[in-house]
Length: 533
Image 1: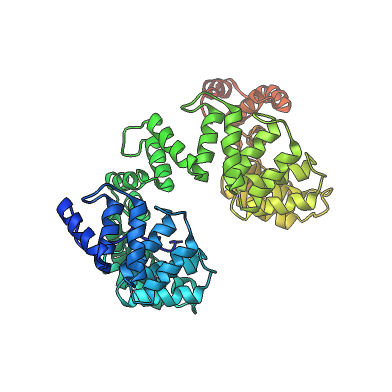
Image 2: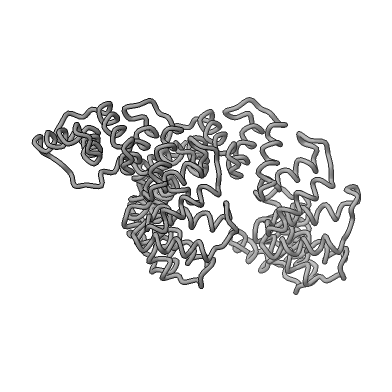
Protein backbone atom coordinates (compact mmCIF):
# COMPACT_ATOMS: atom_id res chain seq x y z
CA UNK A 1 0.00 0.00 0.00
CA UNK A 2 1.26 3.48 -0.79
CA UNK A 3 2.30 5.32 2.37
CA UNK A 4 1.46 8.90 3.21
CA UNK A 5 3.75 11.31 1.45
CA UNK A 6 6.69 12.38 3.56
CA UNK A 7 7.51 15.85 4.85
CA UNK A 8 9.33 18.02 2.28
CA UNK A 9 13.07 17.62 2.36
CA UNK A 10 13.99 21.07 3.67
CA UNK A 11 13.12 24.73 4.15
CA UNK A 12 11.32 26.53 1.36
CA UNK A 13 12.65 29.97 0.40
CA UNK A 14 9.63 31.24 -1.52
CA UNK A 15 12.05 33.61 -3.27
CA UNK A 16 14.75 33.31 -5.94
CA UNK A 17 18.21 31.94 -5.15
CA UNK A 18 20.71 34.52 -3.92
CA UNK A 19 24.35 34.26 -4.75
CA UNK A 20 26.08 37.54 -3.89
CA UNK A 21 27.72 38.77 -0.71
CA UNK A 22 26.42 42.25 -1.47
CA UNK A 23 22.91 40.90 -1.41
CA UNK A 24 23.61 39.23 1.91
CA UNK A 25 24.83 42.51 3.39
CA UNK A 26 21.78 44.32 2.09
CA UNK A 27 19.48 41.70 3.53
CA UNK A 28 21.32 41.73 6.84
CA UNK A 29 20.84 45.44 7.16
CA UNK A 30 17.11 45.13 6.57
CA UNK A 31 16.84 42.20 8.98
CA UNK A 32 18.58 44.13 11.74
CA UNK A 33 16.04 46.90 11.27
CA UNK A 34 13.25 44.37 11.95
CA UNK A 35 11.99 43.65 8.43
CA UNK A 36 10.45 40.17 8.79
CA UNK A 37 10.82 39.13 5.15
CA UNK A 38 14.50 40.06 5.28
CA UNK A 39 14.95 38.12 8.54
CA UNK A 40 13.42 35.07 6.88
CA UNK A 41 15.60 35.48 3.78
CA UNK A 42 18.69 35.90 5.93
CA UNK A 43 17.84 32.69 7.79
CA UNK A 44 17.48 30.92 4.48
CA UNK A 45 20.87 32.23 3.32
CA UNK A 46 22.51 30.91 6.48
CA UNK A 47 20.85 27.49 6.08
CA UNK A 48 22.12 27.12 2.53
CA UNK A 49 25.39 29.05 2.72
CA UNK A 50 24.29 31.55 0.06
CA UNK A 51 26.47 34.65 0.12
CA UNK A 52 27.72 33.70 3.58
CA UNK A 53 29.22 30.74 5.38
CA UNK A 54 26.60 28.15 6.29
CA UNK A 55 25.49 28.54 9.92
CA UNK A 56 22.39 26.74 11.12
CA UNK A 57 22.46 28.41 14.55
CA UNK A 58 22.24 31.85 12.97
CA UNK A 59 19.61 30.55 10.59
CA UNK A 60 17.50 29.51 13.59
CA UNK A 61 18.03 32.94 15.17
CA UNK A 62 16.73 34.82 12.14
CA UNK A 63 13.90 32.38 11.46
CA UNK A 64 12.77 32.92 15.06
CA UNK A 65 12.78 36.65 14.59
CA UNK A 66 10.67 36.44 11.45
CA UNK A 67 8.40 33.74 12.90
CA UNK A 68 7.75 35.78 16.02
CA UNK A 69 6.74 38.63 13.75
CA UNK A 70 4.10 36.32 12.25
CA UNK A 71 5.72 35.51 8.89
CA UNK A 72 4.21 32.19 7.88
CA UNK A 73 7.12 31.09 5.65
CA UNK A 74 9.51 31.56 8.56
CA UNK A 75 7.18 29.71 10.93
CA UNK A 76 7.08 26.84 8.46
CA UNK A 77 10.85 26.73 7.97
CA UNK A 78 11.42 26.91 11.71
CA UNK A 79 9.11 23.91 12.02
CA UNK A 80 11.20 22.04 9.44
CA UNK A 81 14.40 22.84 11.39
CA UNK A 82 12.89 21.49 14.61
CA UNK A 83 11.56 18.40 12.89
CA UNK A 84 14.91 17.62 11.30
CA UNK A 85 17.07 18.74 14.23
CA UNK A 86 18.94 21.30 12.13
CA UNK A 87 20.59 23.97 14.31
CA UNK A 88 18.46 22.87 17.28
CA UNK A 89 17.75 19.69 19.18
CA UNK A 90 15.15 17.65 17.31
CA UNK A 91 11.75 18.48 18.80
CA UNK A 92 8.64 17.31 17.00
CA UNK A 93 6.40 19.13 19.46
CA UNK A 94 8.02 22.45 18.56
CA UNK A 95 7.84 21.51 14.88
CA UNK A 96 4.09 20.93 15.18
CA UNK A 97 3.68 24.19 17.09
CA UNK A 98 5.31 26.26 14.35
CA UNK A 99 3.59 24.35 11.56
CA UNK A 100 0.27 25.14 13.21
CA UNK A 101 1.08 28.84 13.48
CA UNK A 102 1.81 28.92 9.75
CA UNK A 103 -1.07 26.61 8.86
CA UNK A 104 -3.58 28.84 10.62
CA UNK A 105 -2.45 31.64 8.31
CA UNK A 106 -3.31 29.44 5.31
CA UNK A 107 0.24 28.41 4.37
CA UNK A 108 -0.32 25.18 2.40
CA UNK A 109 3.07 23.50 2.99
CA UNK A 110 2.59 23.92 6.75
CA UNK A 111 -0.98 22.63 6.53
CA UNK A 112 0.31 19.58 4.71
CA UNK A 113 3.10 18.90 7.22
CA UNK A 114 0.76 19.41 10.16
CA UNK A 115 -1.70 16.96 8.63
CA UNK A 116 1.14 14.48 8.21
CA UNK A 117 2.13 14.84 11.87
CA UNK A 118 -1.45 14.28 13.04
CA UNK A 119 -1.68 11.25 10.76
CA UNK A 120 1.51 9.76 12.20
CA UNK A 121 1.14 10.99 15.79
CA UNK A 122 4.46 12.83 15.68
CA UNK A 123 4.75 15.82 18.00
CA UNK A 124 1.00 15.67 18.56
CA UNK A 125 -1.45 12.97 19.52
CA UNK A 126 -2.52 10.97 16.47
CA UNK A 127 -5.83 12.35 15.24
CA UNK A 128 -7.21 11.31 11.86
CA UNK A 129 -9.88 13.99 11.96
CA UNK A 130 -7.23 16.70 12.39
CA UNK A 131 -5.08 15.08 9.70
CA UNK A 132 -8.07 15.11 7.38
CA UNK A 133 -8.78 18.76 8.20
CA UNK A 134 -5.29 20.01 7.47
CA UNK A 135 -4.79 17.85 4.38
CA UNK A 136 -8.09 19.21 3.07
CA UNK A 137 -6.99 22.80 3.68
CA UNK A 138 -3.73 22.25 1.80
CA UNK A 139 -5.37 20.17 -0.92
CA UNK A 140 -7.89 22.87 -1.73
CA UNK A 141 -4.94 25.20 -2.32
CA UNK A 142 -3.52 22.74 -4.82
CA UNK A 143 -0.89 21.00 -2.68
CA UNK A 144 -0.37 17.73 -4.58
CA UNK A 145 1.01 15.79 -1.61
CA UNK A 146 -2.05 16.69 0.45
CA UNK A 147 -4.34 15.76 -2.41
CA UNK A 148 -2.64 12.40 -2.63
CA UNK A 149 -2.95 11.80 1.11
CA UNK A 150 -6.64 12.70 1.00
CA UNK A 151 -6.98 10.11 -1.73
CA UNK A 152 -5.30 7.57 0.54
CA UNK A 153 -7.63 8.38 3.42
CA UNK A 154 -10.73 8.02 1.27
CA UNK A 155 -9.41 4.80 -0.26
CA UNK A 156 -8.70 3.16 3.10
CA UNK A 157 -11.58 4.73 5.02
CA UNK A 158 -9.16 6.18 7.54
CA UNK A 159 -10.80 9.08 9.37
CA UNK A 160 -13.57 9.27 6.77
CA UNK A 161 -16.13 6.86 5.27
CA UNK A 162 -14.42 4.76 2.60
CA UNK A 163 -15.13 6.16 -0.85
CA UNK A 164 -13.01 4.86 -3.71
CA UNK A 165 -14.51 7.28 -6.25
CA UNK A 166 -13.65 10.26 -4.04
CA UNK A 167 -10.17 8.83 -3.59
CA UNK A 168 -9.75 8.68 -7.35
CA UNK A 169 -10.90 12.30 -7.65
CA UNK A 170 -8.10 13.43 -5.34
CA UNK A 171 -5.52 11.14 -6.92
CA UNK A 172 -6.40 12.60 -10.29
CA UNK A 173 -6.01 16.18 -9.08
CA UNK A 174 -2.53 15.36 -7.75
CA UNK A 175 -1.63 13.22 -10.76
CA UNK A 176 -2.54 16.01 -13.16
CA UNK A 177 0.06 18.11 -11.35
CA UNK A 178 2.67 15.42 -12.02
CA UNK A 179 2.60 13.84 -8.56
CA UNK A 180 4.16 10.42 -9.19
CA UNK A 181 2.59 8.53 -6.31
CA UNK A 182 -0.88 9.55 -7.38
CA UNK A 183 -0.11 8.68 -10.98
CA UNK A 184 0.94 5.24 -9.80
CA UNK A 185 -2.20 4.80 -7.70
CA UNK A 186 -4.38 5.82 -10.64
CA UNK A 187 -2.56 3.23 -12.70
CA UNK A 188 -3.42 0.59 -10.10
CA UNK A 189 -7.09 1.62 -10.06
CA UNK A 190 -7.40 1.48 -13.84
CA UNK A 191 -5.64 -1.88 -13.81
CA UNK A 192 -8.01 -3.39 -11.25
CA UNK A 193 -11.16 -1.57 -12.33
CA UNK A 194 -11.66 -0.42 -8.75
CA UNK A 195 -13.78 2.74 -8.74
CA UNK A 196 -13.35 3.17 -12.49
CA UNK A 197 -14.06 1.12 -15.60
CA UNK A 198 -11.03 -1.07 -16.15
CA UNK A 199 -8.83 0.45 -18.85
CA UNK A 200 -5.51 -1.26 -19.46
CA UNK A 201 -4.17 1.52 -21.66
CA UNK A 202 -5.00 4.22 -19.10
CA UNK A 203 -3.31 2.07 -16.50
CA UNK A 204 -0.16 1.76 -18.60
CA UNK A 205 -0.18 5.50 -19.37
CA UNK A 206 -0.29 6.45 -15.68
CA UNK A 207 2.35 3.90 -14.74
CA UNK A 208 4.56 5.31 -17.47
CA UNK A 209 4.12 8.90 -16.27
CA UNK A 210 5.12 7.90 -12.74
CA UNK A 211 7.94 5.64 -13.95
CA UNK A 212 9.46 8.39 -16.07
CA UNK A 213 9.70 10.50 -12.91
CA UNK A 214 11.69 7.73 -11.24
CA UNK A 215 8.90 6.19 -9.16
CA UNK A 216 10.29 2.70 -8.49
CA UNK A 217 7.00 0.82 -7.90
CA UNK A 218 5.67 2.19 -11.20
CA UNK A 219 8.87 1.19 -12.96
CA UNK A 220 8.48 -2.31 -11.50
CA UNK A 221 4.85 -2.57 -12.63
CA UNK A 222 5.73 -1.38 -16.11
CA UNK A 223 8.58 -3.90 -16.25
CA UNK A 224 6.24 -6.71 -15.21
CA UNK A 225 3.90 -5.90 -18.07
CA UNK A 226 6.65 -5.90 -20.66
CA UNK A 227 8.06 -9.07 -19.10
CA UNK A 228 4.76 -10.94 -19.35
CA UNK A 229 3.34 -9.18 -22.41
CA UNK A 230 0.38 -8.03 -20.32
CA UNK A 231 -1.53 -5.23 -22.08
CA UNK A 232 1.63 -4.35 -24.05
CA UNK A 233 3.64 -6.31 -26.63
CA UNK A 234 6.09 -8.58 -24.83
CA UNK A 235 9.51 -6.95 -24.82
CA UNK A 236 12.19 -8.43 -22.59
CA UNK A 237 14.64 -5.61 -23.21
CA UNK A 238 12.15 -2.96 -22.10
CA UNK A 239 11.30 -5.11 -19.10
CA UNK A 240 14.96 -5.38 -18.14
CA UNK A 241 15.41 -1.63 -18.61
CA UNK A 242 12.56 -0.76 -16.24
CA UNK A 243 13.53 -3.45 -13.73
CA UNK A 244 17.04 -2.03 -13.70
CA UNK A 245 15.86 1.55 -13.13
CA UNK A 246 13.82 0.40 -10.13
CA UNK A 247 16.49 -2.01 -8.90
CA UNK A 248 19.13 0.70 -8.88
CA UNK A 249 16.86 2.65 -6.53
CA UNK A 250 16.82 -0.34 -4.19
CA UNK A 251 13.45 -1.80 -5.23
CA UNK A 252 13.82 -5.35 -3.90
CA UNK A 253 11.28 -7.10 -6.14
CA UNK A 254 12.94 -5.59 -9.21
CA UNK A 255 16.33 -6.76 -7.97
CA UNK A 256 14.91 -10.25 -7.48
CA UNK A 257 13.34 -10.35 -10.94
CA UNK A 258 16.58 -9.17 -12.54
CA UNK A 259 18.30 -12.01 -10.72
CA UNK A 260 15.80 -14.48 -12.16
CA UNK A 261 16.31 -13.10 -15.68
CA UNK A 262 20.11 -13.33 -15.54
CA UNK A 263 19.89 -16.75 -13.92
CA UNK A 264 17.64 -18.15 -16.65
CA UNK A 265 19.34 -16.33 -19.53
CA UNK A 266 15.91 -15.26 -20.80
CA UNK A 267 16.66 -12.85 -23.69
CA UNK A 268 19.99 -11.95 -22.08
CA UNK A 269 23.33 -13.74 -21.92
CA UNK A 270 23.06 -16.00 -18.88
CA UNK A 271 25.23 -14.56 -16.12
CA UNK A 272 25.16 -16.44 -12.83
CA UNK A 273 27.45 -13.90 -11.15
CA UNK A 274 25.14 -10.99 -11.93
CA UNK A 275 22.12 -13.06 -10.97
CA UNK A 276 23.67 -13.86 -7.61
CA UNK A 277 24.55 -10.20 -7.07
CA UNK A 278 20.95 -9.10 -7.63
CA UNK A 279 19.63 -11.91 -5.43
CA UNK A 280 21.99 -10.80 -2.65
CA UNK A 281 20.87 -7.18 -2.95
CA UNK A 282 17.21 -8.18 -2.71
CA UNK A 283 17.85 -10.66 0.09
CA UNK A 284 19.74 -8.04 2.11
CA UNK A 285 16.58 -5.91 2.03
CA UNK A 286 14.52 -8.79 3.36
CA UNK A 287 13.00 -10.06 0.12
CA UNK A 288 11.85 -13.54 1.16
CA UNK A 289 11.91 -15.00 -2.36
CA UNK A 290 15.52 -13.89 -2.82
CA UNK A 291 16.47 -15.28 0.59
CA UNK A 292 14.92 -18.64 -0.28
CA UNK A 293 16.71 -18.53 -3.62
CA UNK A 294 20.05 -17.92 -1.89
CA UNK A 295 19.31 -20.81 0.43
CA UNK A 296 18.79 -23.10 -2.57
CA UNK A 297 22.07 -21.93 -4.09
CA UNK A 298 24.04 -22.64 -0.94
CA UNK A 299 22.29 -25.99 -0.50
CA UNK A 300 23.12 -27.13 -4.03
CA UNK A 301 26.40 -25.24 -4.54
CA UNK A 302 24.99 -23.29 -7.47
CA UNK A 303 27.31 -20.35 -8.16
CA UNK A 304 28.64 -20.51 -4.61
CA UNK A 305 30.55 -23.04 -2.56
CA UNK A 306 28.10 -25.53 -1.05
CA UNK A 307 27.42 -24.49 2.55
CA UNK A 308 24.49 -26.05 4.37
CA UNK A 309 24.80 -23.69 7.34
CA UNK A 310 24.43 -20.73 5.00
CA UNK A 311 21.51 -22.47 3.30
CA UNK A 312 19.83 -22.87 6.69
CA UNK A 313 20.56 -19.20 7.51
CA UNK A 314 18.86 -17.87 4.37
CA UNK A 315 15.97 -20.34 4.55
CA UNK A 316 15.49 -19.29 8.16
CA UNK A 317 15.27 -15.59 7.34
CA UNK A 318 12.67 -16.22 4.64
CA UNK A 319 10.79 -18.78 6.74
CA UNK A 320 10.44 -16.35 9.63
CA UNK A 321 8.71 -13.99 7.21
CA UNK A 322 6.18 -16.71 6.43
CA UNK A 323 7.58 -17.70 3.02
CA UNK A 324 6.12 -21.17 2.53
CA UNK A 325 8.79 -22.54 0.20
CA UNK A 326 11.55 -21.59 2.64
CA UNK A 327 9.61 -23.10 5.54
CA UNK A 328 9.41 -26.37 3.66
CA UNK A 329 13.10 -26.27 2.71
CA UNK A 330 14.06 -25.52 6.31
CA UNK A 331 11.92 -28.44 7.44
CA UNK A 332 13.87 -30.72 5.10
CA UNK A 333 17.16 -29.53 6.64
CA UNK A 334 15.91 -30.16 10.18
CA UNK A 335 14.69 -33.56 9.04
CA UNK A 336 18.10 -34.48 7.63
CA UNK A 337 20.20 -32.67 10.24
CA UNK A 338 21.94 -30.87 7.41
CA UNK A 339 23.34 -27.43 8.30
CA UNK A 340 21.38 -27.59 11.56
CA UNK A 341 21.04 -30.13 14.34
CA UNK A 342 18.59 -32.89 13.43
CA UNK A 343 15.21 -32.06 14.92
CA UNK A 344 12.24 -34.15 13.70
CA UNK A 345 9.77 -32.15 15.78
CA UNK A 346 11.21 -28.89 14.42
CA UNK A 347 10.94 -30.28 10.90
CA UNK A 348 7.27 -31.10 11.43
CA UNK A 349 6.69 -27.60 12.78
CA UNK A 350 8.10 -25.99 9.64
CA UNK A 351 6.28 -28.43 7.36
CA UNK A 352 3.06 -27.52 9.13
CA UNK A 353 3.63 -23.78 8.70
CA UNK A 354 4.24 -24.26 4.98
CA UNK A 355 1.36 -26.72 4.63
CA UNK A 356 -1.10 -24.35 6.26
CA UNK A 357 -0.24 -21.84 3.53
CA UNK A 358 -1.07 -24.38 0.85
CA UNK A 359 2.43 -25.66 0.05
CA UNK A 360 1.78 -28.92 -1.83
CA UNK A 361 4.90 -30.84 -0.91
CA UNK A 362 4.63 -29.82 2.73
CA UNK A 363 1.02 -31.00 2.86
CA UNK A 364 1.95 -34.26 1.18
CA UNK A 365 4.98 -34.86 3.42
CA UNK A 366 2.89 -34.22 6.52
CA UNK A 367 0.41 -36.79 5.25
CA UNK A 368 3.24 -39.32 4.86
CA UNK A 369 4.46 -38.61 8.39
CA UNK A 370 1.04 -39.02 10.00
CA UNK A 371 0.40 -42.19 8.03
CA UNK A 372 3.72 -43.73 9.07
CA UNK A 373 3.95 -42.17 12.55
CA UNK A 374 7.27 -40.60 11.59
CA UNK A 375 8.07 -37.78 14.05
CA UNK A 376 4.40 -37.59 15.06
CA UNK A 377 1.89 -39.99 16.55
CA UNK A 378 0.40 -42.17 13.83
CA UNK A 379 -2.95 -40.72 12.83
CA UNK A 380 -4.69 -41.89 9.64
CA UNK A 381 -7.34 -39.19 9.94
CA UNK A 382 -4.71 -36.43 10.06
CA UNK A 383 -2.84 -38.11 7.21
CA UNK A 384 -6.01 -38.15 5.12
CA UNK A 385 -6.64 -34.49 5.92
CA UNK A 386 -3.23 -33.41 4.62
CA UNK A 387 -3.34 -35.72 1.62
CA UNK A 388 -6.74 -34.33 0.66
CA UNK A 389 -5.55 -30.71 0.87
CA UNK A 390 -2.73 -31.49 -1.54
CA UNK A 391 -4.95 -33.72 -3.70
CA UNK A 392 -7.51 -30.97 -4.11
CA UNK A 393 -4.73 -28.91 -5.70
CA UNK A 394 -4.35 -31.65 -8.33
CA UNK A 395 -1.16 -33.09 -6.86
CA UNK A 396 -1.06 -36.60 -8.33
CA UNK A 397 0.95 -38.35 -5.58
CA UNK A 398 -1.48 -37.00 -2.97
CA UNK A 399 -4.50 -38.08 -5.03
CA UNK A 400 -3.01 -41.55 -5.18
CA UNK A 401 -2.40 -41.66 -1.42
CA UNK A 402 -6.00 -40.60 -0.72
CA UNK A 403 -7.11 -43.52 -2.86
CA UNK A 404 -4.66 -45.86 -1.14
CA UNK A 405 -5.91 -44.93 2.36
CA UNK A 406 -9.53 -45.38 1.27
CA UNK A 407 -8.52 -48.80 -0.04
CA UNK A 408 -7.09 -49.95 3.30
CA UNK A 409 -9.26 -51.69 5.87
CA UNK A 410 -6.85 -50.92 8.73
CA UNK A 411 -7.04 -47.14 8.17
CA UNK A 412 -10.65 -47.16 9.36
CA UNK A 413 -12.18 -45.39 6.36
CA UNK A 414 -12.64 -47.97 3.58
CA UNK A 415 -14.55 -46.70 0.57
CA UNK A 416 -13.73 -48.51 -2.71
CA UNK A 417 -15.82 -46.18 -4.86
CA UNK A 418 -14.13 -43.04 -3.53
CA UNK A 419 -10.78 -44.75 -3.78
CA UNK A 420 -11.44 -45.44 -7.46
CA UNK A 421 -12.30 -41.77 -8.04
CA UNK A 422 -9.00 -40.56 -6.55
CA UNK A 423 -6.97 -43.20 -8.35
CA UNK A 424 -8.60 -42.10 -11.58
CA UNK A 425 -7.73 -38.44 -11.01
CA UNK A 426 -4.11 -39.34 -10.32
CA UNK A 427 -3.96 -41.81 -13.22
CA UNK A 428 -5.37 -39.27 -15.68
CA UNK A 429 -2.55 -36.98 -14.57
CA UNK A 430 0.04 -39.64 -15.43
CA UNK A 431 0.74 -41.08 -11.97
CA UNK A 432 2.11 -44.59 -12.59
CA UNK A 433 1.17 -46.09 -9.21
CA UNK A 434 -2.42 -44.93 -9.67
CA UNK A 435 -2.48 -46.31 -13.21
CA UNK A 436 -1.32 -49.68 -11.91
CA UNK A 437 -3.89 -49.56 -9.09
CA UNK A 438 -6.65 -48.97 -11.65
CA UNK A 439 -5.35 -51.80 -13.81
CA UNK A 440 -5.40 -54.11 -10.80
CA UNK A 441 -8.95 -53.11 -9.90
CA UNK A 442 -10.24 -53.82 -13.39
CA UNK A 443 -8.20 -57.02 -13.50
CA UNK A 444 -9.71 -58.33 -10.24
CA UNK A 445 -13.10 -56.59 -10.28
CA UNK A 446 -12.34 -54.84 -6.99
CA UNK A 447 -14.87 -52.00 -6.58
CA UNK A 448 -15.58 -51.98 -10.33
CA UNK A 449 -16.98 -54.38 -12.88
CA UNK A 450 -14.22 -56.69 -14.08
CA UNK A 451 -12.87 -55.45 -17.43
CA UNK A 452 -9.67 -57.00 -18.83
CA UNK A 453 -9.44 -54.49 -21.68
CA UNK A 454 -9.52 -51.59 -19.21
CA UNK A 455 -7.01 -53.45 -17.05
CA UNK A 456 -4.72 -53.81 -20.09
CA UNK A 457 -5.02 -50.10 -20.88
CA UNK A 458 -4.01 -48.95 -17.38
CA UNK A 459 -1.27 -51.57 -17.00
CA UNK A 460 0.16 -50.38 -20.32
CA UNK A 461 0.13 -46.72 -19.15
CA UNK A 462 2.01 -47.66 -15.99
CA UNK A 463 4.35 -50.13 -17.70
CA UNK A 464 5.52 -47.52 -20.19
CA UNK A 465 6.62 -45.42 -17.21
CA UNK A 466 8.71 -48.30 -15.89
CA UNK A 467 6.30 -49.81 -13.36
CA UNK A 468 7.72 -53.35 -13.01
CA UNK A 469 4.58 -55.11 -11.69
CA UNK A 470 2.51 -53.54 -14.47
CA UNK A 471 5.07 -54.84 -16.95
CA UNK A 472 4.78 -58.32 -15.45
CA UNK A 473 0.98 -58.26 -15.54
CA UNK A 474 1.04 -57.08 -19.15
CA UNK A 475 3.34 -59.95 -20.03
CA UNK A 476 0.94 -62.40 -18.44
CA UNK A 477 -2.03 -60.86 -20.29
CA UNK A 478 -0.25 -61.10 -23.66
CA UNK A 479 0.78 -64.66 -22.93
CA UNK A 480 -2.77 -65.73 -22.05
CA UNK A 481 -4.68 -63.47 -24.46
CA UNK A 482 -6.60 -61.95 -21.58
CA UNK A 483 -8.10 -58.56 -22.55
CA UNK A 484 -5.84 -58.45 -25.59
CA UNK A 485 -4.93 -60.66 -28.55
CA UNK A 486 -2.50 -63.36 -27.54
CA UNK A 487 1.05 -62.34 -28.52
CA UNK A 488 3.93 -64.37 -27.11
CA UNK A 489 6.53 -62.01 -28.57
CA UNK A 490 5.09 -59.01 -26.72
CA UNK A 491 4.60 -61.17 -23.66
CA UNK A 492 8.31 -62.06 -23.76
CA UNK A 493 9.31 -58.39 -24.09
CA UNK A 494 7.26 -57.19 -21.11
CA UNK A 495 8.23 -60.10 -18.91
CA UNK A 496 11.89 -59.55 -19.70
CA UNK A 497 11.57 -55.92 -18.69
CA UNK A 498 9.90 -56.86 -15.43
CA UNK A 499 12.60 -59.45 -14.76
CA UNK A 500 15.22 -56.78 -15.37
CA UNK A 501 13.61 -54.74 -12.58
CA UNK A 502 13.90 -57.69 -10.22
CA UNK A 503 10.42 -59.23 -10.39
CA UNK A 504 11.27 -62.87 -9.58
CA UNK A 505 7.94 -64.20 -10.88
CA UNK A 506 8.73 -62.71 -14.28
CA UNK A 507 11.92 -64.75 -14.55
CA UNK A 508 10.07 -67.95 -13.73
CA UNK A 509 7.24 -67.09 -16.14
CA UNK A 510 9.76 -66.37 -18.92
CA UNK A 511 11.24 -69.84 -18.50
CA UNK A 512 7.81 -71.42 -19.03
CA UNK A 513 6.95 -69.00 -21.85
CA UNK A 514 10.03 -69.91 -23.89
CA UNK A 515 8.84 -73.53 -23.93
CA UNK A 516 5.61 -72.39 -25.59
CA UNK A 517 7.29 -70.32 -28.33
CA UNK A 518 8.32 -71.64 -31.73
CA UNK A 519 11.69 -70.82 -33.20
CA UNK A 520 10.44 -67.87 -35.26
CA UNK A 521 8.67 -66.27 -32.28
CA UNK A 522 11.70 -66.73 -30.08
CA UNK A 523 14.02 -65.26 -32.71
CA UNK A 524 11.74 -62.23 -33.13
CA UNK A 525 11.42 -61.81 -29.37
CA UNK A 526 15.19 -61.96 -28.86
CA UNK A 527 15.68 -59.39 -31.65
CA UNK A 528 13.06 -57.01 -30.22
CA UNK A 529 14.01 -57.48 -26.59
CA UNK A 530 16.53 -54.60 -26.38
CA UNK A 531 14.07 -52.23 -28.03
CA UNK A 532 11.18 -50.40 -26.48
CA UNK A 533 7.96 -52.38 -26.40
